[in-house]
Length: 190
Image 1: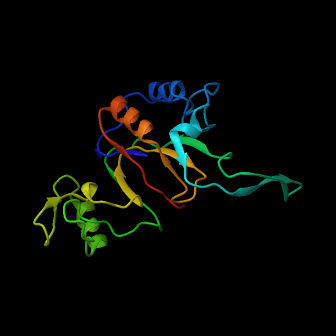
Image 2 (image 1 turned 30 degrees about the horizontal axis):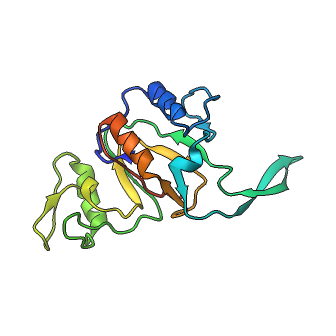
Image 3 (image 1 turned 60 degrees about the horizontal axis):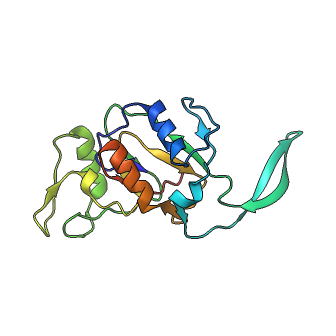
């Protein structure tokens, strides 16, 4: 999940962590630490809506070998983490990034990779011009179809397959109220 306004970031990550504990996303027994992941809280399955789940094999390493332990519900190994706070908006896309669409016309942005090259050279001034609707916007306004984002900060839920789960409307409203900016989500396959 990420603030839809590319420059937006929580002012204080320790406070943000504590707030996420109070709403039940993060386990209230954990302590904030930089570059750590956290266990889901008591309301995790209410604020993260799962469309489906599957069984996964839990593994353990012993004597330089992997051993199968038990089959568990795929929702169980989920973890919550914060990204670093980038100094400027970054393109957050991976191998699963789909071609974006223009926000007004819904048409696929042709040659979007080349447009992103130009954006990297002038992030604040670049505007893409739609030949279909005459709209001019930066790549942060494109509809990335939940496959990429442009942001300085993300709230990561790991070990979820693309399309398997999404943040509830309640959670997105809460984050928007907390930060004063709308939030969205995307799936990142690493």
